[in-house]
Length: 147
Image (cartoon, rainbow, N blue to C red; front, side, top):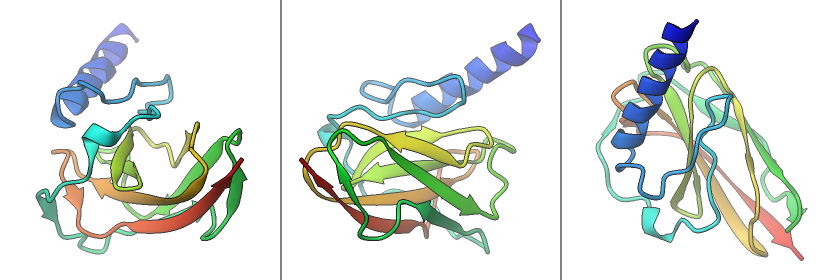
């Protein structure tokens, strides 16, 4: 059991280093979800290396396009995918308004966004392979957050 925990922590450290050294990268939870913090201005999406999806698909199941929330709501982002997340380091990323919100590891197919400011927000999800390279195509929805 200790060996499994050590191996999971090593994989987590490797993932953080691959995400940019972990300077402002979110902290991990027990479920393998890398949850975001409120300030992501320094982690904007840049042109990065991607690989073809080769049939892999990720779809945002929740929230729905155009759904409205309040600033106090916890917004559950839930996806469906045919990609073998959790195997060989395969995982997915959440981007909020073009900035990295978090990395979801293991076989988790959901994460929670908290602390969003009022206004329209774009939530994008992308699959990533074991080398931490995003697949080309993901999914995106726009939501509204009110006071």
